[in-house]
Image (cartoon, rainbow, N blue to C red; front, side, top):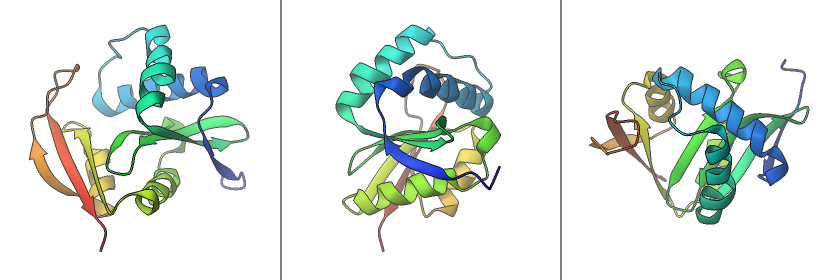
Length: 149
């Protein structure tokens, strides 16, 4: 797999179904819960709500969506990596791009049950600043913050 080049590109709706399928699989594995929204409503959310509020970048390998990040200069809303491509520095690559485009401070939430995400964010300089954020999944959240040095 490592012989394939990862391309980071801006999201376009032609990748909607691949992105949502990857997102749902990755999230389900991370939190042990099925997605509560239909696939179609998730695609609508991606194309019409998330894309209106955040920049979205995709990581592509051979035209296959292997990661996504939704962000602005202050916040990361979503970061998911395809379950078969985790541990290949794709998340690191996406995160570094967002850090470089940030205002020097980023916040995000992750589910408390997602210990892999916690290790990932803490390894990349994020510190816990809060707990207990409410969400649709009714799971405890951890709020993280990164400040540029």
